[in-house]
Image (cartoon, rainbow, N blue to C red; front, side, top):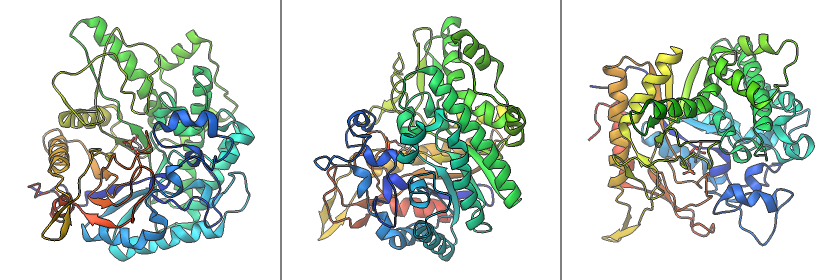
Length: 471
Ligand code: BG6
């Protein structure tokens, strides 16, 4: 059986992980541009005030998508995609973040990208901010703890909504907004372990997001704007009610972001937590109305792994994917990077989000980061990535069950890193997710040639049959 008519199939990337050309076309520096390979979060402490010429920064060249864009989109088109999720680098458009006028050369690059997508009949889904806060704003305002960020973000968002009016109708305001609780530096340029700082920074992001939603609707009533949640499904370690309560607390840390963005107000559990911790939100007159007027149209999320939590789980999660929870799941196999592979969890999470908000959901990231090997057979280079096909097939099967058996309204599926790109958590190239292999190593060396993996033909069948053929 095919998926519902109009279901969106495609892939997802982020500008800082694929474009490279970090200082071309008038682009300014973002937080991603000062993170080195191998634990990008840590590197910030020594490098955030500038570039050290002795170090390698993966975002500077990435896979050079900036210069291979038409070739890359043609490969996506060949697979029969109907949707491409990508982000627009804030610092290509506003190099320092606080300019009053946008950088035309930066916009021209995305004009060409939209042209290519139209040529292939691929619908764009744009993430306005994906893990790359302008360094200029971090230096000037200390990033999102300051309310000044809201105006800068809205100027950026308005520029995009006006420029791409009629060409793009699907938008996401912030990638994995709940990463403010797990890795605020990578997510939002916030360099603090203080919960109050994170709460205030998130408050300003909520405000910016809500105002952007209202603006998008005002500029084009056909715009649909979603939130993007780092899918943190968690199972209780045992059926001991104390573990169940522990898991509830863990989920509250994450779900409060979605609650604010879908409902337009803070949930009671989070307000009470702030009270207990002496955290005061920087609320000003009119904010409550703005939050209510800018609730999202749909809920998108990334899904890679699940957690096991309980009464031993305490404090704020550490690490990009929050994998340092206190328990292991003996029922799951792990990826080479230790992420528990859990296809059924995807069905479960789709249900949870849909039941909670009754809004359409969309899987905008999912995939297996793995080491791929290029082998030469009869003089032809091949990459046999059956492990990736297996992972994706199992997840898409569960998505089908969520739709067919459970009645969840799922808009689409964009797999993560459909062409190999640098990893967000580590900056590595060797952690590959793609259907398309890119010949670059962890130090940025290579020919940058693109090669189709076995999964390329497989995903092409999936997209071209609207999911009827997963074999
Ligand atoms: C998500 C991010 O957290 O996970 C992506 O939105 C990221 O930017 C993806 O690339 C996978 O993580 P990693 O570290 O394997 O690239």
